[in-house]
Image 1 (cartoon, rainbow, N blue to C red):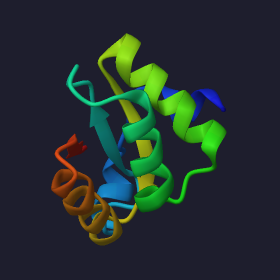
Image 2: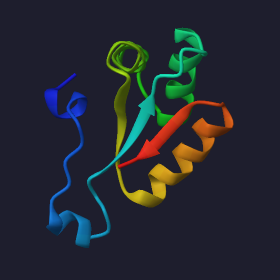
Image 3: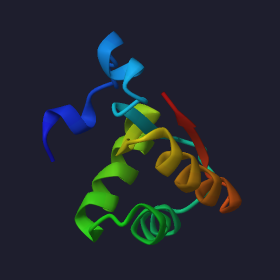
Image 4: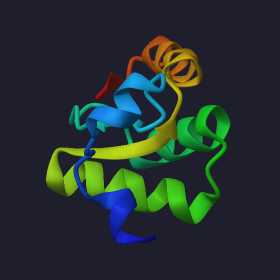
Length: 93
């Protein structure tokens, strides 16, 4: 996993004006759901490979949050809603 994926999201003014191409879907730790549940949810909804989903689950657990997807606001909103329906805590930044 590259460092840009793990680090906190940064959005410059130009990308913000172009429709938010640099928005991030952030998964927050909740201390409720199992690693397997979170991993399965990321694979299903965010189309992660199993190793990527596992890394995101561990980062979320140990650091409190993790950027799990980068993209356009509309696409991320759909994923956010689906993850929230699974009772996961997610935001878009």
